[in-house]
Amino acid sequence: MLNLPALAHFPEFAMYRRLAICLSAAAAIVLSACATLQPVETAQKMLGAPQSAVRDTFGAPTETYQLADGTSRWIYSKQPLGFEVYAADFDASGKLTNFRQMLTEKEIYEARPGVWTKQDVAERFGRPREPIQYYPLMKREAWSYRLYAGAFQPAHFSAYFDDRGVLDRTMIIVDPIGGDARDGSK
Image 1 (cartoon, rainbow, N blue to C red):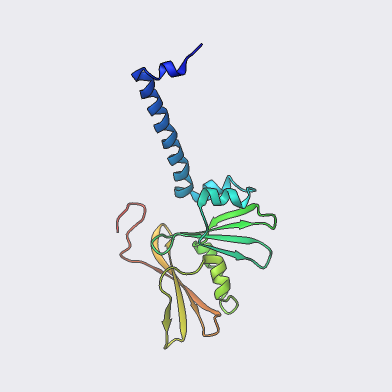
Image 2 (tube, one colour):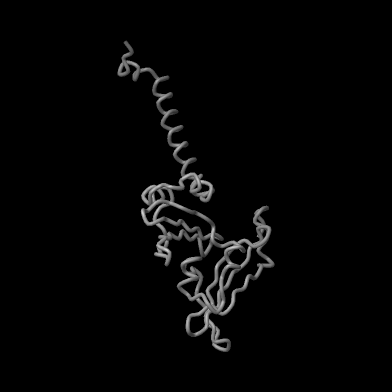
């Protein structure tokens, strides 16, 4: 019979125990880092999971919306300092059906000036985390978001609304001194 309390007096046992605890902690950190550093890949493996599992993995959403088609959307915004806004979509039973990065040129080009309202833009990209600007000569309110355009070039996406709150136009402006995110320069 193996008597574990008796083994506890050996220095080697204590060393292995500490090593096991450290390895367990490191594994937990690595798993949580995967959710932080590769959220889309992590979430794709969770399709069909309940809302509670998504909350446990990614934390509380920054915003939630009930879409017209019955989908519940959770927004995870990394703005204003980050370049991402993620959307987690759930069906009527609360199961994850989609998870994607919303601040992409593909998503932005789906915006419909003259049709979309502030609510539509918020449901797609979340509320802006940068200060909302108003341009009195244009009579336009501008919401801005940071994103990577093209080949990882830092840029700003702006949505302009008329005084009725209807989307008038969108614009992507590349940051000429933003550097290239791939090489860490600024």
